[in-house]
Image (cartoon, rainbow, N blue to C red; front, side):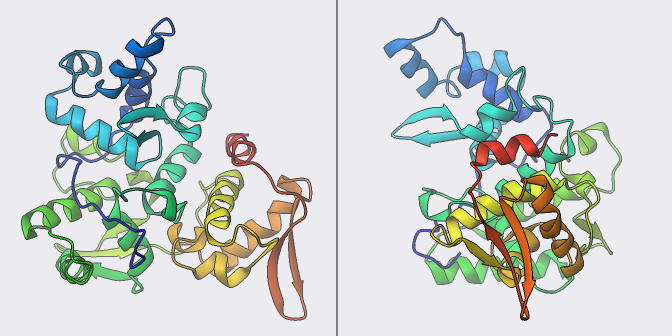
Length: 311
């Protein structure tokens, strides 16, 4: 987060946490009609979230439309470039009708959305990191327990150090939304459950009125394929020219799968050992002479790894 290429954003969600069907809705909105082509289509896609018709098509209020755009971009479902919107490879593969998991019912989708928000994927290529608080929580909090007050203080100091102008109220709302993505609020209303897409991951639990805990340990619902996808995306960003990656890097480096998924050492090792069978020996675990690492014999494409997450 201290790299010059990391441009943090602490707003954009309009105080709405990510809901289960919003990413599918965003894909459908940007995809439009197959017959809509050429210049007209480019202009329509460019302004699709700003048009009043988006309120009708998405079936939500104006602020929620803006929130859906924010989340779909933050989760790498839609790319924004040169004023244009386009589906990303991740968004194209998973969320359209007939995709790998259009209704976000598979556990891999939840884990990969979490990865997109908090992981270390392709940071140098991102114009703005729209989920900086998520990235901080899962990479820079080293203690098991933390408080929202302590988190606010740390993020405020970080923003000051980076010269980011952000009001305390805006930062407070961002922290609240981040926590609400993983922890249901005390009130048991329908909306509380609706806006907690990632709550079932069990990554953050409440310990008191303002006390939270990060759960590090095995994650039974995290598939080996989803772990592989995150590993490859991290690998491509962290050391794209290397054919090996150390256990310590995978388990503990900022933005790594071990850190972002909050896996303990035994769980990381088990995942890495399973890669040989999963990838038909294209990625192999090596533990010799005290050096623990993964060896790539033939690289997989991210699309291939993504399909393995849904096997």
